[in-house]
Length: 578
Ligand SMILES: Nc1ncnc2c1ncn2[C@@H]1O[C@H](COP(=O)(O)OP(=O)(O)OP(=O)(O)O)[C@@H](O)[C@H]1O
Image 1 (cartoon, rainbow, N blue to C red):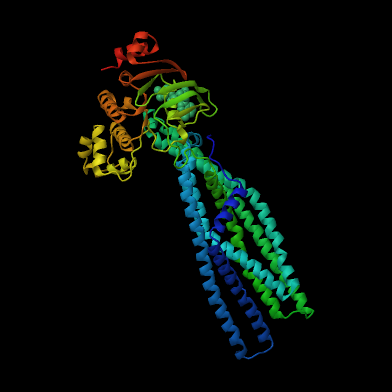
Image 2 (cartoon, rainbow, N blue to C red; image 1 turned 60 degrees about the vertical axis):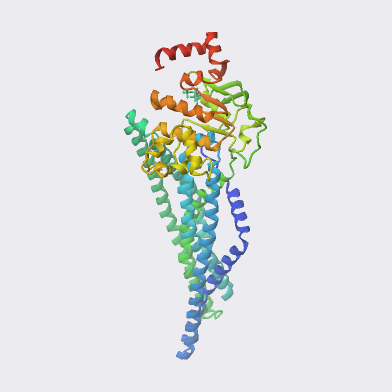
């Protein structure tokens, strides 16, 4: 299984929540005040009913009952308004904090180093910004207002019972350890179950996302059954864990009922004895019993929703964990003092794997185009990713104009990788990602430079045609051309090119090579040569073998030297060149 992204400790989550509440002090204080008012108002009916019992027992006439009824109605109205207002304020405060958290998590996730995401799997990140956010959202809007008002009500009711007679308060408090025992029994069992459930769901979505992303490979190799089998297995695991969680919950409810029964029985027995000894009136005991009975539903709500709050807590830890992760590129960055690209003694290995690059050194002079050549797995794409700052070297350094590539401003080095993504929306907007606010003339000129203007204009709505998922489908070669046009618009001094020209077919590949040459004109460029014609037209060629530089020189020089490159060229000329 893949490594997961960072999860915050309970202490880190609490510290984060405290900071968020501190920045919204007034709102938090108002929310608490409304909650206390609502709880206080809802204890009044119990007192009033106690009074009523005493007056009826004393044979008072109907006139004595009316003021009690008025108090009851007034308390109900005030309590109702305060409860609604408190609930609204709690949900509002929670939603604002959550919206902020969601934005910051996504902003942080978008800036995580590619190798971290590769290691953790994108499914984990997806489930954090979707399932985890929803879990917290539901807890904040459905559970938290009720839970906060229930806890306030419990505190105030217990104080009121002690106010009637401390022995009645004590009798009611007998239930507290029983509730606590119930929670102590439940929580340690529930926590690992929820964690296991969450991991099972993340694993299932990871496999699902991978199957969807690799649909073509799955079809090509007839792997449908195997993938379905693995999704089915992981789904069954998630289901079994959920059923165990529910069985646990049922046994927990029994423990809640036991605490309620014991508490109420204690209040009634103690009340009976106190009345018998003439210490308190029947009405006072009725009020205490009503106050205690009134807590049944709110406390049960706290107990049974504790799991959802705990669930939300686990989700919160996963989001706060992402917030605490190191991001790749600082805002702004340091401007390079020149356009020379240098890899110096760079070594690299993927997490736990064998060395992929060993002390690779290369220099690309300002405005020079250098092609990287080597057999499959030689380390070309890895070297390109290090040069573009997507990966960090294990030792050695990669710089442009003397500044580490990971510290450069975002528009200093552009990479066109094998994985080009076309964002959903009008084609012109896809290009404007590189330069927001570019005019239609500038967008057209960029497309023209890479030879894409003619087909772009021929699309159903020209440059306004919606492309990407659900829109007009572009070919792989067209998507590559768009990526090159984005480079032209971004106008970076340094470009790293690792396109998938091979997928475009040989005529398409030649078009793409021309498009790339046009986009690279005047820039410092490191090009992974998937076709040797790209190497032949470069200023210099560097040959990689098993992660080491084995040859370097111009195309004619290397051909004349009769070494490894000359061998590649001979093989290429004989079979692939058309
Ligand atoms: N994300 C990754 N995790 C682990 N190993 C990787 C990863 N990417 C590449 N490798 C391994 O690193 C080595 C170099 O891969 P790289 O893609 O850099 O080679 P390449 O020369 O570009 O090959 P190709 O021409 O096939 O793209 C290979 O052995 C490859 O299996």
